[in-house]
Image (cartoon, rainbow, N blue to C red; front, side):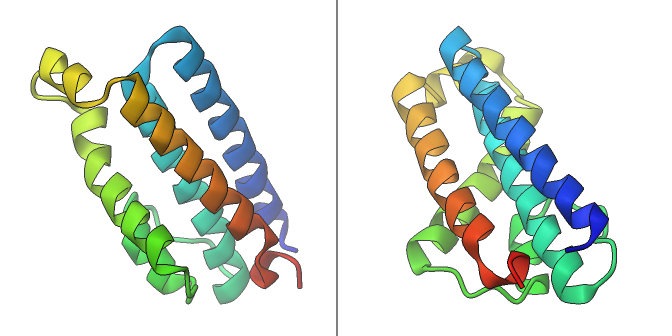
Length: 130
C-alpha cells in the first residue's frame, strides 16, 4: 500500500469519528459535511492505489468512483449521488435555518449510518488489500 493511501485512510477515520461527535453535539450540517469528506478521502485512497498516483483535487464523489474503477452496489451508488448533491448546500447554506430544517437529527443519523456502512465496505475492498 502506498504511503499516501494509508494517510487517506487515516484521514477518513479521523473525519468519520469527528462526524460522530458532531452528531452528539447537535451540529447536524457538519455531520453531513464530514460524511461526504470521509467518503471523498476513502475514494481518494482507492484512486491512489488504482492509478498509482495522487488523485486530483476534487470533491466530486461520482468522479472519484469512476476514476477508482469501483463497482459499488447500486444502493451505495444511490447514496453517494445523494450525499454528493447534499455537499454544497450543507457546506455553504443559502439559508441556515432552512438547511437546519432539511437535515434534522433523524436524517443526519441515517446519513452517518449509511456512510459508515459504505466506508466499511470500501476499506475491505481488494484495491486496498492487495
